[in-house]
Structures are given as structure tokens and as C-alpha cells.
Length: 114
Image (cartoon, rainbow, N blue to C red; front, side, top):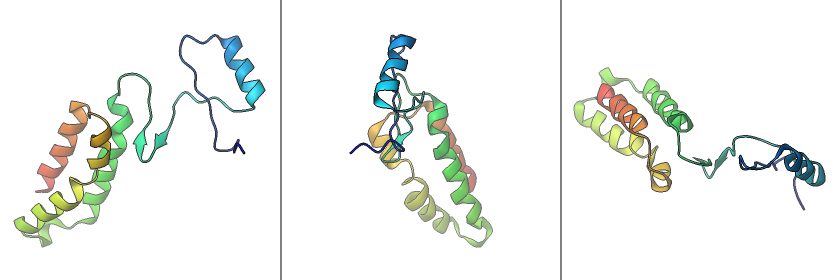
């Protein structure tokens, strides 16, 4: 059975508006421009843009906000960076090559925390 609440369709840029509306009407599925996420990784068409991976930077900042740097030694900060911050983008990096701006941002956050 198709779950119409969780289903969506996307089309290539070559599809005509007539065919898009015809397919959506026949299948009774809504249309989205973005494919969303699958297993925590963004699903996209074409070359990945840095905006798709902004949530990695946001999650990094959220993790860092909870940690008190002035209570930790340098060794403690190093362990936290290696065990938590470097583990956040690991799955995404196995699937995609991150844009340089995102990699630099992750490194900058880790460096500032240290």
C-alpha cells in the first residue's frame, strides 16, 4: 500500500508542466522541489550546494553550546572533539564529498572550541 502522506514526487527540469500535472493527478501524490533526507543524508539532484549541509554546522554549534570549555583541560577538549564533533559528519562524508566551505566551517568550530 502506498502511504500518500509520506510520498512525494519530483521531476526533472526537462518534464513539461502538462506531464507533471498529469502524473500528480493520476498518482494523487504532491510535488516537492527538494527530495529531503534519506538516512540522515540530504537527497539531491545535481551538484551538492553548501546550503544542503548547513545542518551539520548547526548541529556542531548546538553540541558545542552545551560544553563548558573553561572546566575542561586541553586533553578533555581534544577527546570531546575527536569523539563527538568528528563523528557528526562521518556518515554524510561517506556518502558525499562535502563542499570546502562546510569542511572549513567544521574545522573552524573545532579549532575555536579547542
